[in-house]
Length: 147
Image (cartoon, rainbow, N blue to C red; front, side, top):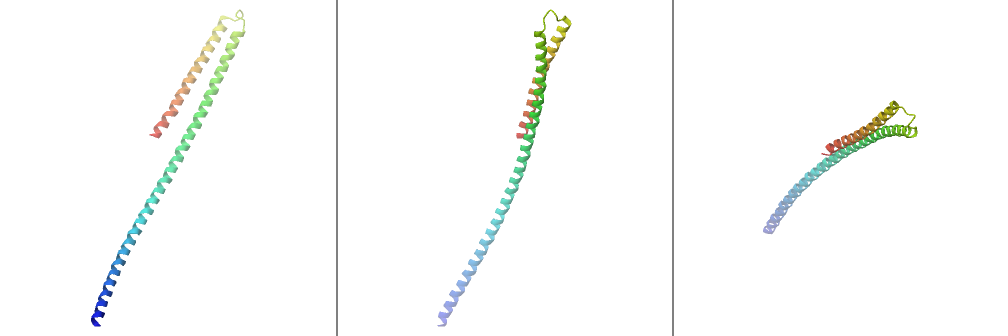
């Protein structure tokens, strides 16, 4: 009976030892899982911060782009009004030339009218050239920001 008790005690001790080893493994696995979860939380937080920063940068860029478009549109409207004003002056001068009888115009008046007509056309050409320059300037900073 004692030998039977001794055998059972040894089996019990081995089972206790195995249970202790399993508990240690379980604690190790739990510690590893907690560590991995903490790393994942940290990574998620890092990605969320990066996304917030990206959103903010995108909103700033979007605002800058829209402001630039609005400024460009205002500039184009001003230039268009200037050009239309010059074209209207040119049309009035041309109408005066075409409607007045050629015999009643003096050479001085005709020279003055032709000079004004030429100046108006030059102003229109210059305004169109300036519009092209403004357009190019607006395009260049946009390409630099994209880079």
